[in-house]
Length: 302
Length: 302
Image (cartoon, rainbow over all chains, first blue to last red; front, top):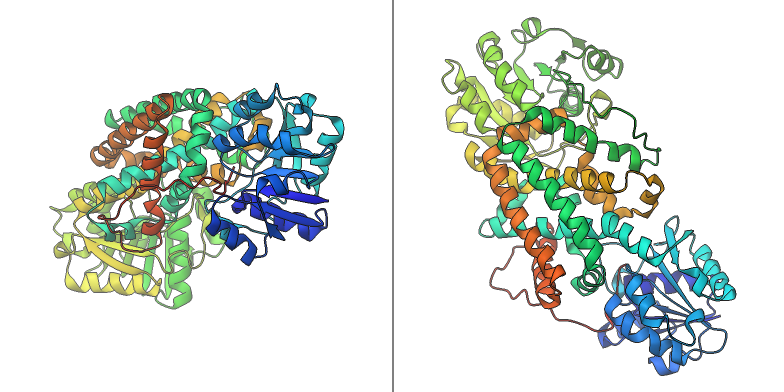
């Protein structure tokens, strides 16, 4: 198959590498408006050729948009205008509702399959592309009842080739859940970086004090603003709902500290510890007590 | 030398392992009020013997308290009462002001050296102890002008044996800076876990949606409440100051999203990206423009 990848950065570039290596793509053609990225993608061998949309799209059996969500909304209808008869189009965006809305009335809507591979790093651009980035991760397909069955089948095959598990859901549900488990964690990281840079601006050596914990918590603040600002904008309703809950909780936490409510702090943190079991994939048992047993002489992790 | 380690969990246990392996400690005696931890430390070979404070302390040349900071405040004066003439006492706590205040009038204050090794993981207890945990990390010594020079020299030797770099600073400065670069990052993680668990409580499968970014951001929420609740309490003034700045910033971020201020979001996030250079140890150049250049066709990381 011929695959066209629009946006040859971390996601598009990684996808191109894997599809070519697995043999699913006989030929990968890239499109990128950033000439530096285009040259870099060629030099790194991510794609066989860089060209423009008008040349790449009609010749491809699969077209993948791996660009910021605001650009996807603009470009997707044009791509659907240009595709060949049995071609399939997908996008890799972290929001799905606004993108689906942009093409739901398009005569060729059923050739589009909305998807979101939950994979990435905090780096960006063609040089960040990695072989195996998607392996073992989850891919989401949204609103598949609006896509032609053969188009969905091709997408399933593409994601299987990448080594991904697949789940399908409503675009609205998708956007609500990723607001909580992905979008706000990016915002808490960005704001942590802002706050620390603000206060420590004249004392750069103080960053010696940052341990691996800080580094892990602030890692996502390295992410691309070009990509993330449109995501927050396109998912504003759910992101603001999630942030309001977060701000309420952090204000309550602050007040427990200010008021010396040690027992309440212990209870809150013990309940939050439940995330350990959840992340380990162990089913949460909501009936279980979160009460914390205080062990004097218990070990510390300063 | 004989070393007594009070609290044989992640930090005390790791310390015991390294000091014994390096030969600095001929014998390591552990003290822990939690009988399960005491038995585990013996079984894992972290220490040569477990005993009580009254037996361990007078026989040791170095006494290390590796327990929650509230317990350190209580125990440190008693330990100073019990030590031999040339012995040195230190603690591994993440706050230093309240601990120093607890012994500043003690007749043997100059045998205590306040320290804070910036090392740890989100795990706790003796089974979390690791060889090499401290290697390459930074240790802080505080208010060393209040300690006897020979006591400071012994501590410097101990930390050098662990492979740590050392920096010394005022206890007050220490507490202010760790509030920003360590304590609030723990709080933002705990609150993220609380918020996500709250909203997603009936849909445990949704955690499939959590990518490595969420996992990294929420990692510190696995930390021990026994250790962290007292840290927040003992550093309440600076932690609340840091949290107030954080809450101000996240509220502003939320409002930019709600009001569709895309350009302001891009600027804020581009400025936060500076954390990448700071963490890489590259000197920050405050004069440099944080203005973000928008590249259409730029790659995405959904």
